[in-house]
Image: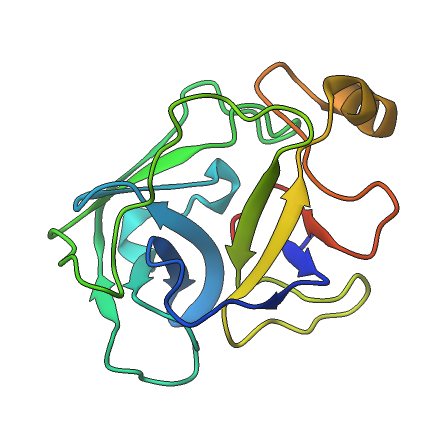
Length: 185
């Protein structure tokens, strides 16, 4: 199932300088976030052997060379030791870059939260994923979407036992706007 951003809008170019576009042999794959000059975080369901992966930093339009991009191979990929590929529990992986990212206005680490989000807060998701529910139309420019964090009760009412204690839900129960699956594109 494709990762998606449904009902999003084009992000202001380079407004998400931590967003990384991951490719396998020049084909779109997933997304990641830069957490410092040598490490990025992504979803464990995006794992592939390190020699197949390329990280594209400073991207906005995936089909245009904007002169802002840094392409860096990973040195190492580490999936969470308790990742479960059937339930997506602990769906995290770390990617060590083979060389440090050069910070500038197009490439910056994501500001890490100092506390957990609570129900009702809005989160911004971004990526180049599939833009429609049925069929495939991948975004060529970075898409953004603001989604509200849902209470655990609303989350469990919608997803039941699929939700573990390591997960939270964000989105619109009425549909139309969504980031489906763990947002990794």
